[in-house]
Length: 282
Image 1 (spheres, rainbow, N blue to C red):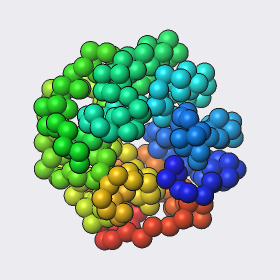
Image 2 (spheres, rainbow, N blue to C red; image 1 turned 90 degrees about the horizontal axis):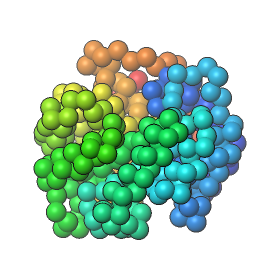
Image 3 (cartoon, helix red, strand yellow; image 1 turned 90 degrees about the vertical axis):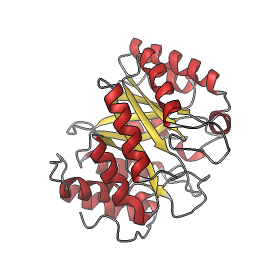
């Protein structure tokens, strides 16, 4: 939602998120405790949280934070199970995204992790620019491995290498996640990938082949990073992810009828986006 120019009324956000809660996803990234000046669209996160119906859902809530101050707000809500923090493999992007160097961001991660431990929350660290960057900053799968090792030493148990600008290839996805899963078998790795519509299927299939069991998506593939060079590069469409997973013979504990209802509501509230032939019907 954060990339949409027009403010989505709080009641519409609540209606949409409650529809997603009825689908049966493991985790729902529902909002962010960040500066209202930086992201006005998410300034009503606390109000949205108060309107969510959590009485009959298996889904756990995740809130994004960009600094310790946001984490201090988020941990006060017992309804939130996960905090997500963007740590960039690229120094330039880290400065642009959170106004911190990588060294400062690592210090922030450690402070937020301690806060999470104290309040029985779990920290999810997204490794932004996890498949390269457009700035010429140093990058290699080995660097991602070094970041991961440091995070593991700090007690982080969920790490999501992120394809911020949609530059990953199936080969790079399979190679990176294959290496990480073998090297850190006790860590839960997530794939937060951006993609052009026609590349969605091959990227999801590569993640599955590597053994990834946590894949982020957004209905219709809405969202993404404004720094991507192609306007068609967005999040992986959730409806295509679920189709591809089922096609591989993997069972999913989600309600397909509820997913279809949420998809209609997504178009109504957030607008629509037309995708190419990647994936297929739900």
